[in-house]
Length: 116
Image 1 (spheres, rainbow, N blue to C red):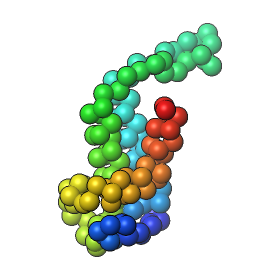
Image 2 (tube, helix red, strand yellow):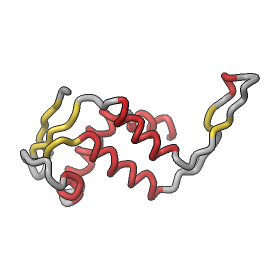
Image 3 (cartoon, rainbow, N blue to C red):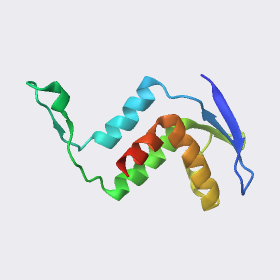
Image 4 (cartoon, rainbow, N blue to C red):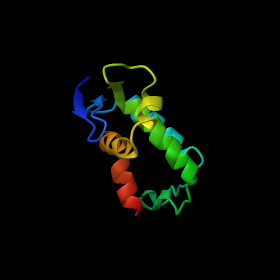
């Protein structure tokens, strides 16, 4: 596994994250995100299969952010303990910075940008 380390801009926290996710990590994130989503399957025309317009509750997206942080962040200030709690207690600008880095690793950032 490869890692990246960076410092948050405001609180100067040292954060260590994975550079990439395993297939299992990606599967867990997708399972959470698409758990209640209905897919349209058309065996006669496989290209037409996909996800129709869906509404995802905002609370679920917040929970997805938490799960993404848990899957991507390895250490905060040299410790693997209570990572999510410690990131949630950071200055909001540091939280946003860490979440953006995590979303780039997880691919969730691209998903969010496609949905806009």
